[in-house]
Figure 1: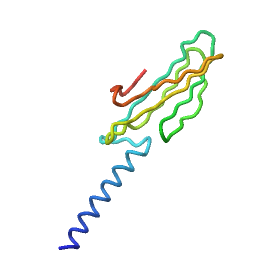
Figure 2: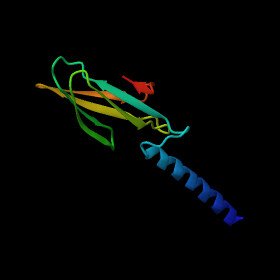
Figure 3: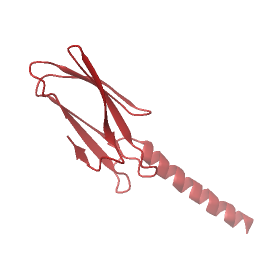
Figure 4: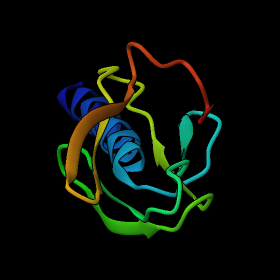
Length: 113
């Protein structure tokens, strides 16, 4: 009987581990794993826009956008803890601004502009 209980506990542990691992892998498509896409457009007149995208653990790096250029990136949404957050630094000429671009509790879009 103890062996059966150990097998059940081990099976549940394995399933939870697989599910959590899939949640952390960016780029995995599944009906369980939700994704969002964010599009950033440079609407500045004759000025390049530099963006730096990050969340708590991932750094998407710096990207330079010419006027009217667009940058799109995607990520998995934390369906367990409901706390996905991506923040950006925007740099142009002598200006630097920080914005929370995607807050899961606030933003319900799957494709955000």
